[in-house]
Image: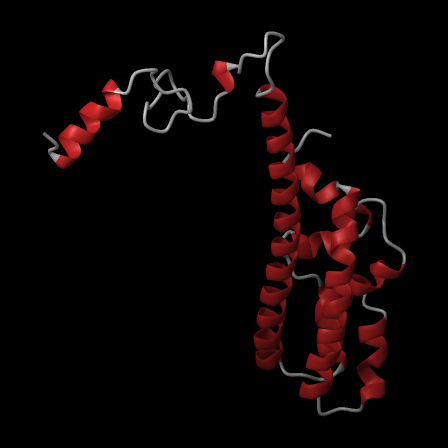
Length: 182
């Protein structure tokens, strides 16, 4: 598929990358609410367990658009579904904001690091494959000069190019100039 911003979020491979992250942060959310709530766990346990932001991992959607709460999180929005467990645990607004900001920052950092790391790895593989295909020898066994790694914009530096001049006059002039040789 052509790579666009929309494709990144609607690619089925991205969903597979997101499942372990959201499972991890479901546990983090449980710990945050349990450790900061003064009410009985029976009041908020179901609110955490059935939170749609995390429950989609049990039955992954075909596309992120099929899980609107997940899509909101990926767009850096905070759905009410995420605030509901904090309300059920009777955690105050000030503490809820503090906990949510930290929680969402860590979640987004893991999401983007994971997705971009995978994307960068695939992009490099694609570039390397393309470079290998372009730099193959032609039928006569001559290296294709247009695809040389060191040949850019019509200028070839003679000191880093693998095809140096047959005579060493250029090198000798450089060494004389650089080290004041006789």
